[in-house]
Image 1 (spheres, helix red, strand yellow):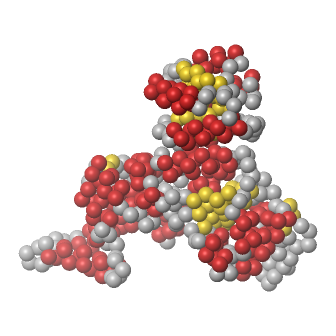
Image 2 (tube, helix red, strand yellow):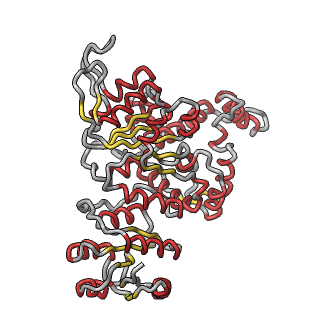
Image 3 (tube, one colour):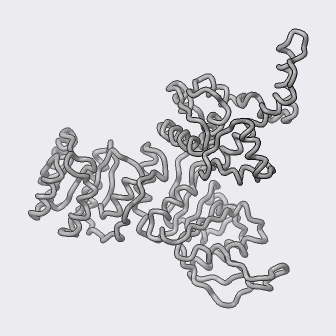
Length: 477
């Protein structure tokens, strides 16, 4: 490869030295600085064939330099390094025109390979920069496994490529699909999701493509399908592995031709949507079994993304716990913290239910336990399946049996076997409180949804919340 001039900007002297030596041994002329101002002066002077810059520097954010560099030297490639290794950083780097993004700490061989690719390939003009990117983290985690996911997502934001997301249940497949939409070129359009496993087989085609009046018995009016609802945006096909073969055939035609017919319709409708599919099943195995069309698989599997199980990124558990604790507070539940030993125990748990299992555990802890700081003993009890004041039945006993076992403690605690007066109301309140708190936690503080879940009138729920002194932040989703 022809030697090049590489400009390196990082406020860490050790990183500047390592990069200078490694790239210098390859024959490149490496100029290093700890300040964005110096880097900008070199760029203005016309120096450099490639820029490698950190994000956080003493005088300016490296990401803010990229649009200015692209304006005066659009062919100059920029590689961004950052210890702020979140999806938002990767997305911002891609949006502003960086050739690639590399989280710290990085593998030196990976960076050298990235430099070689950057010098080989001409730079492409990115999509228009998104104004005012919201400072929030749609996906939580800074582990190496998640860093690779962030880099893939950042590269896909400006495209309309079809994506197949695979991973175990509870790993956050819909969250990733939503992030692709919210930060992508179709973000101004709708995000429409449909779960194939939740729709009766005979209704899937109508749900996807809509139907005309009279198309079948009971079709008294025209119905808009999910493809039409998602025009200009993203259609998320969750649990695609559960799609019936006959519906697979129709979906394949849509992907091939870019248009579809509503059930009973005669005029084709253009399918102006981006398709993102997801599954927890092994589609290769389903193809071999004849349960999933091979040609449809390849149409959907243009860009495969496999989400890691939580046990593969246990270093993200503390950050996820902090996030879910904050969500619980926003939903009106009391603020909690976890002891360090409790967090360490959570990192050793296998998490067969993945992030969803952890989220549900944190909601349970905030709703049911009175102490502000959750210790190791509580975590051990919950993970052993004996928490919730022993009110959750195990597989071998009914709820009534579990309650009876718990109530025996009231009587056994008294020498004469007779508890104090008022037992009926006391037991009802003990059961009602966690039931209402769990329902509110499950619905994120939405009292209307909680009332529907419980089968109560909303006014009745409000009255009970006042009687039990359960605080809820009104209006929080």
